[in-house]
Length: 403
Image (tube, rainbow, N blue to C red; front, side):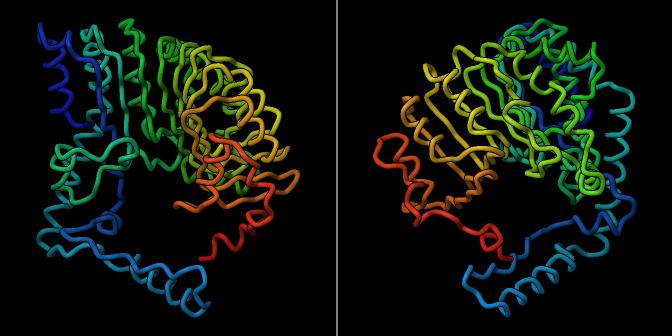
């Protein structure tokens, strides 16, 4: 956790003559308290001690009147306080928040955590796995995390919601530089969600980050763009994030792990301005031992995706695809080729299958009779490609997102 006592415990454990040599994994809950300009802004994020129930969403066939009523209820829900604290309790919570925020700012400004982490990792001779999680994306928040920040009455998720895309970058760089400095052969790295701006690191720092990837066998890397980045992309049709996705920096980092067995990558937006393409992410690189992939919210072409599957046909056993968009090509020959090329133990399709040219759209759904399940059954066991059946074709995206 991003608190002085947490770093002190890490330092003490790493200095223990016996324990330090038996530590195999490190879990870092990197969230910090968000910056609020005043008490009113802070209070809008205060929840509890019990949580009000959300208004019930109407079904797709609901009338326009019911949908309007639902939107009114949601607005009312959002505008009203989400807590039942007294004024005295709120004031105490606000004071605790200010104290904790000052402590975190001081910790960061003095760079104390960077030195502690670097030296601690150097003393953990058998460290193999690091998990850096924000906003409970990889693990449910631990009780110790909740207890440590409970007096502030607001959850510590601020760094993961950084408006400019810096969230978690300092924590990630700190960990990986520690790995590189100590010569640790890190095999497993899970990071989610992390601001994309670590890709802006100076060349000497970025080269050290790449070295820390060299022994990885399993990688989860979920990127997030900040609200300011989204705003700029809509106004100007471009973004700094897209520059680093297109110039090869992201790809160079991923392929710095030539021994990957598993990877899971995506960015948290389907906006084409800063969407990751498969070519940006992996290029034409081949991992000789790759058995499992998860691709989420990524744009590609029929040719690029099929080329990737052909390069890894001899090793892939598990494929997970979620909200993949084809800029060129059709999903039908892709699914037919997956069926023919790969011998899979597991396959999963989530959310949608979309193609821009030719125009295709399938909403996959969930449950036993869903297209998602039918496609998985086809890929694993054969038959006729379900997408040839017009029953499933041509769901209007505007109707799918009705509220």
